[in-house]
Length: 196
Image 1 (cartoon, rainbow, N blue to C red):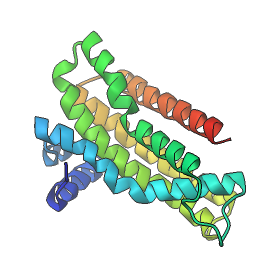
Image 2 (cartoon, helix red, strand yellow; image 1 turned 180 degrees about the horizontal axis):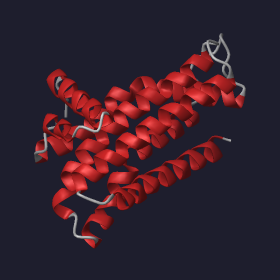
Image 3 (cartoon, one colour; image 1 turned 90 degrees about the vertical axis):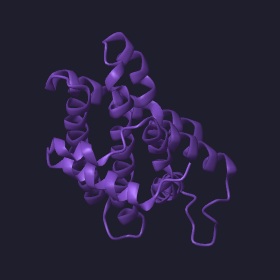
Image 4 (tube, rainbow, N blue to C red; image 1 turned 180 degrees about the vertical axis):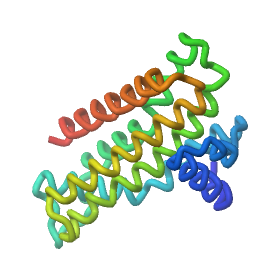
């Protein structure tokens, strides 16, 4: 399923509106069943973030060398790819049960569509500090500060989007966002353990 440039532009515009706490940003998303399935194709837009993650894992393992290919270990490539994919779908999958349990089934599709586009944008944004560290334009401390600042902005955007799409209170929306953070932390931990 290919996402058109128009859909990418509209969805990223909607995501930026949500960043600025404007609920009218929801109108930018294709909230149809087709839009639901196409929102998962947004993961292809995060390919640069996957490449940065791959390089960062090699740096962490001490095997990022100028004379070696970035794709010379199938195991690392596959584990990082699976972790990348899992971080994209973890919250939408967990929300299936939550939506049914708490009577949010009608809002599930809009929530997933918006969450997928926020995740795509978030993965791209969060790859920037790691990339700056990899190319030597940021120290580890500075990259960590950038990562934390970007993460706070993305979490706030996800919180507002969760409130807007599911019609939840601030506290309930925060709970769902925290669930997403916990899931992604677990995925990151499993990925690092499998790689070594």
